[in-house]
Length: 104
Image (tube, rainbow, N blue to C red; front, side, top):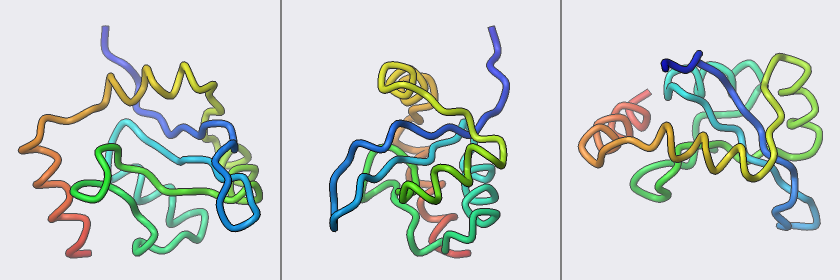
């Protein structure tokens, strides 16, 4: 069954620099970048292949709250894992997307 394209945020549980951070993920890399831009997050903050296996942006609690207000779907850890498994790209597609995202 096809899944609708979506943008997702997990629970802010990742501690770094005195804050709890969350992740912004999407079913589509272009939608991920568009949504991050709507939040005012610079493309340089993107984390994805080859640095990480899952394309995402880290969000502060404030950015997470704004993302949800703009339509991102808040997900539990289990739901995020399912989304990551569903959207994980084959290595060749990941590499192409990584090259494309660094050229913008």
